[in-house]
Image 1 (cartoon, rainbow, N blue to C red):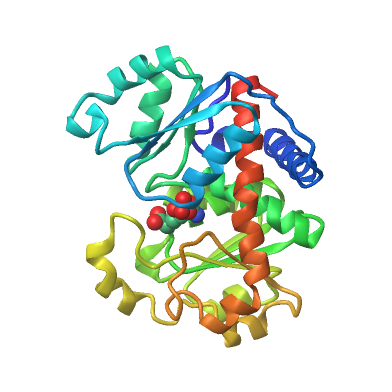
Image 2 (cartoon, helix red, strand yellow):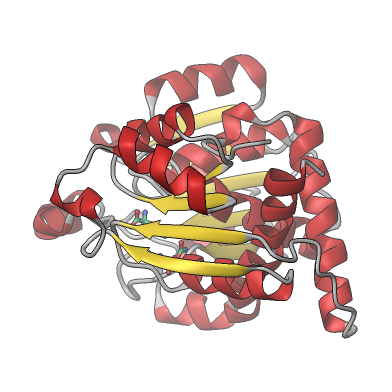
Length: 302
Ligand code: CP
Ligand code: NVA
């Protein structure tokens, strides 16, 4: 049994295995080859926040793999009325084969794993978004041929995406730069780890950060749960945007990634978004293939 609570917990070999399996599952799906590796298995999907990609990719993924998925909104579960996560974990472990959870606190995901007896997959917390980054690495590798030595620059908020990109990028040998305002840097412990284990820079100079990048990545300035800070953040993040000036200092064949949903004319201009739409929607598609690989790895230990 294997959990995906955060990418730090996975070795480079495990990350590479999942990326390879995701490529294989994508190829097979495109060629009409069925792979019912999870026949008879049921995934519970707990959502305390909204989702389009995560929900649909996991649900379709389970279906493709011969299993089934249950959408469990926290508004309807007793967890939403205060039933402890420790009890929810032990109850759901008696019915399900795995749980995917999207919530606020990383501690809640860790508690599910501690008290439950089935694999737990983190579908996003305020701290990290490992499933998204596996799909991102898959997409970058698909477009660039390799990850090692490539420069990834994330521009914007030092949020859950920035945290997971630091770990995924450094582990796979990429050089990672975060360009963000000083007050909105990623997790301090993760940045220290990245500095000690790879090529990592955090700067508030966007053009310096983006210089020579192979991949430019951005995400919303106000994440789910921070809606009340949206106006304040618009001021703080002005200039932390992927636009033509930023593209002009990156490599001439640089690709653009966005986990979506996107706020056009905030973290990315409409022009750059549309010019790089193929790469961005390949990334969204790859959530399906990457999530299937994660499910196989966690449920079958493959
Ligand atoms: N990128 C991502 O996780 O999208 P959703 O919020 O739609 O799941
Ligand atoms: N940082 C964003 C990512 C959405 C997929 C959020 O947490 O809302």
